Image (cartoon, rainbow, N blue to C red; front, side, top):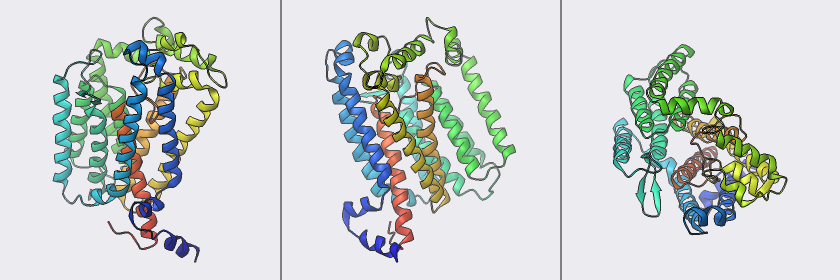
Length: 384
């Protein structure tokens, strides 16, 4: 009887009606995190923006614009993403999307370098990073291929594995390492959730290990970065410097923050690669606790949605999204706390960066759409 009342109360039409079906706790957590991200970049705008770009509001205005685009993208993905994914009938459609991503990943290698590496396409106000969007397309591709696999428990066709390898290799060529490594681990999680036998998982882990070790050992710079990340204390003048400054900012933050501008300037890319350390330095341990609890709640709500998914494809995709957001958050936190050295992963929803923020919002929108569809199906009202 109670369930019937809830279903009747949610029969409102239009966007509001769709909103009522979604996981409102997840939506609220993300909105608060986006607000904290804009507030954080506004708080340090004069410290970093004026110093680096001559515009005290540079980071704040850009982050606000990214957040607005992210919210719009999240709403579109929440309202129409599930129906769009359900409309995929042929593998060719996803192969085409993946090949378009490959074209962009190759094209960006010929773009003007940013800080010595080719990672983005400059669209005047927005720096488009194909690697981040390619990661999301890869998750959808792998989830779809695993869901339609006729041999549960065994390795999927070699074409799927080859597509994963090509995509990760192209991302590695853009001087990324942390992102493709996280993507690889998340794809292993998706394979395991699809029922892949442990011996097959072990084979994939070995193959992935060979690929990454080859990429690392072929470049002295990457090898030094790897040792600097694992043993930052042994590289105080180079790779361990950021680690040392981040720990110092945490130690001096206090409950309400207030670290001086001079101290914050010592941390390169404070609002990007070390966003949580800078956020804590500015706003204190109280806000650090609030943000980490909100990020943890996003992961927990995502796991609940993945477990309750009505189709294997949606379940696998949800697990992939949760793995990406949770893994990125975890690696960023332990980096800022000084347990590992530098990696290029930012803090979801808080750190400065347009592509990362927009893709994270799209991922949340997909989760919201899946959760809404689950509830509608329970009431017999789902109509894609």
